[in-house]
Image 1 (cartoon, one colour):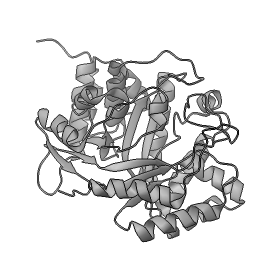
Image 2: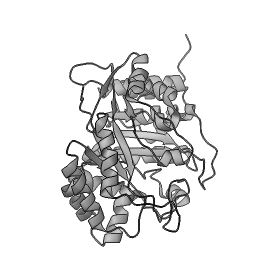
Image 3: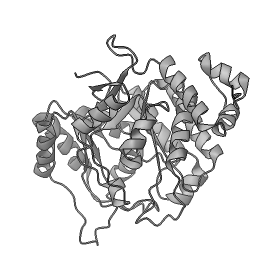
Image 4: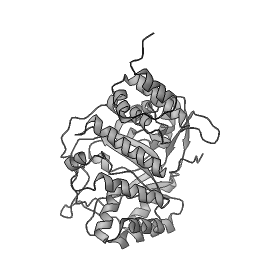
Length: 363
């Protein structure tokens, strides 16, 4: 028998359901990938992340939604972004109500339940644009959850509208916002944020949006984009801060990580491969012991690695993602239908089930 290369005390802590420290997480990072995957899977089962409605742990979920980027105008010039435009660019846009409703009707036609509504940091759109848009969607598409506006957008809104952050979030919720995505997290270490997106909100402000949202009754997801200029210590610090907020609020529904996609961006960094993606997802599942759900990122890794990720701590295959513009602008353009996602899940022996944003089963 081949002896495990993982420290026995750390392994015992994970298998016993105990919390590991950042120092122990760094040791685990260098463990053999298959062993780390086994620990991640054990942590998944401890959280009963797939145990819904008595079906047991064989369930893997997915959601049918659509990304709608209401504008591509942005004034923060992130080095890793290939999507943003300025008002001087010929292909800049702001979607009106009917354009957005048309996209939502197409989503409704295939059984979708949610839109991911995000855009650039447009310097001229007023609060009325956003509140009227939310009110319009809620009135005309009452079965669709609006999962919208990342923490950097909310910090931008507070600055542009000259309003306290909490008031902006409350007004958006009252107008129809249902939950908040974890976009713009990148790495929650300011020296890294200053290197790749110096005009975007800092780590404390990103986390403060989440604390306020959770306090107001809005759940959110949490994310990490890695594989650019950060270190392993930076990644673990990112996870530590997410875990700390989750201890306080219990408001994060899921964690999703993905690798930096370099094509057509100004940030030059050697791309990391699928093994690194699986390693970080597995480590995240082990470290984030207070998160019920971890999503596989087939959108950046492709459907096959998305499948493998289900054996490295993920209990959710993510979104059908009827439309995606930001990652595809950076050169990644994977697409899957509902049937293809169900097949990908079933091929590994799991039972596919559609869910909503709060991980309630819909079938």
